[in-house]
Amino acid sequence: MTHYSYTRGFTLIELTVSVGLFALVMMLASGSYVMMIGLNRQAQGMTSGINNLSFVLESMTRSIRSGSVYNCGGLGDCPFGSSSFSFKDEKGVNVSYSLNGSTIQKTSNSVADALTDPSVTVTSLMFYAFGTRPASAGDYEQSRVTIIVSGTVSAGAGKTQSFTVETGAVMRGTDL
Image (cartoon, rainbow, N blue to C red; front, side, top):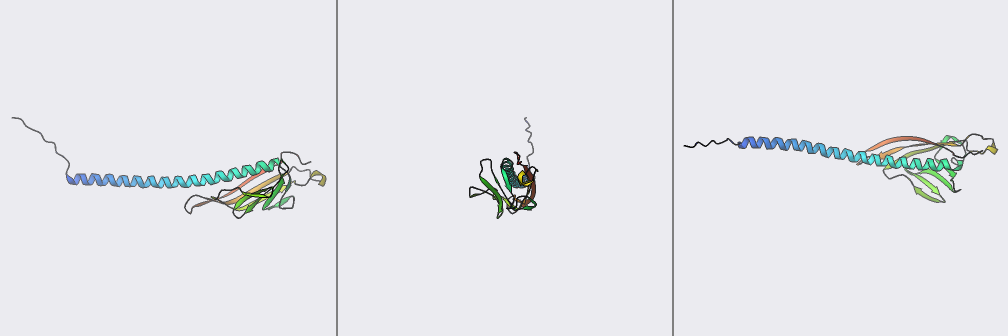
């Protein structure tokens, strides 16, 4: 006589409970994953805006450093700051930087170009220049410019991060 041994299976209640727990765990995990994707997109947007601003400031300081005949808002030196700055670049072309609305603008050969990305909103652009007069006027100080930029960077849907950046440039050649 042969005896068959039957193994016991799962009941409907056990299957329902295990599938329900699995679904709950997967829902929590997918919610966290979606939230992490959103945070990553915000961080990438902010990084893109900051990289753009960094590139603009580096480009400005490089141009200013190799330029001459500095003029801060039509005043020469501006120890109290000015919102515009002009100079002659290495090719002798008049170049100026200023704030136009919420973007940094470069004007060269009477052509104005917006430099900052739309994700960057500039609220303040100040130039502080020293030693801009020629030696013939009794100024033996090396020309130097300090630039301070403030504003916000968009980090996605209605989220912004504020910033204030300061950089400087010293004329490469002498103005003596």
